[in-house]
Each structure stands twice: as C-alpha cells, then as structure tokens.
Amino acid sequence: MCRLVLFAGTCTICNESLTWADLSQELSCLAAKNADAFGSCRRGVDVETHSFDQECDACAGEDEGVGGMDFGEELYHRLLFEQHQRYHGYAQEQLQMQRGHIQVVSSNVPPPTPPTPPTAPSSTKRNIGTDDGDGRRNKRART
Image (cartoon, rainbow, N blue to C red; front, side, top):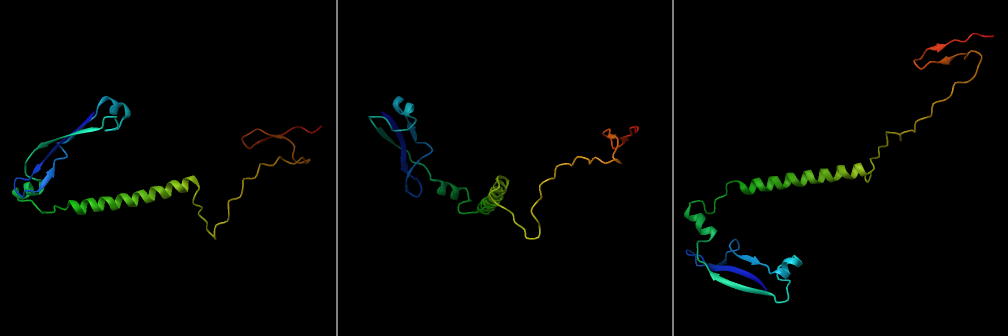
C-alpha cells in the first residue's frame, strides 16, 4: 500500500489553513514503483496527516519588511518570456525554410536554370592537337 504523508496546519499569524507541500511526501510501495505510478497498487493510498503550524510565506515576508514589494522580478520574467517567444518563432521559421515548407517567391528573380553539361570540341581541321589540362594545346605535325 502506498503512503501519502501530509503536513497540514495553520499559519501562526493569520490562522489560514495550509498544507505544506514541500514537506509532504509520496511513498510508493513496491508494486507502484514497478508500475512507475504513485497509488497504482491494488490496496490504494493510505493518507497520514500530521499537524504542523508555522508562518505562511506571505506573513514571513511581512516580518522581514519585504511583503508585497516587487523587486522587478515580474518585469524581468515577462521580458524573458517575450524574448523566448520571439526566438522560438524565429527558430521555427528557419527550420521550416530549411525543410522547404516555405517557398520564397519573388516576381523579379527568374527561377534558377539547371547547369549545362560541357560540350565536346567539334572536329575541324583547325582544331588539331590535344588539350594537356592546363589550357595549352600540344600541336601535332600534319602528315
């Protein structure tokens, strides 16, 4: 049987009922571990609740004199998120262009022409000799 150990109580200042999630634990039995899912065993979950009273985060922040103050973190996270969204959009567009999903069409640019194969030299009387590869011709004597 799996066990869920909860720590619940009230804030010592504002008396709000809270469950301390960072202290709570999910303890899986062997069957649930093998299934890789908490509570997936035949016997279910046994919930144990322990009382735990302490100041909540809001009240603890007010004690330190920083409760309700914004240190620019919200603005920083919003700008960071917007920058991530712009980059993600740009990266997706580049990826689609590389894969050929977006065809860039311009009316001023003609489509590329395929390369033409090299032509063999024509046989004329003036074209006597062979090309030695560096652009010079070797002359042969006429007989």
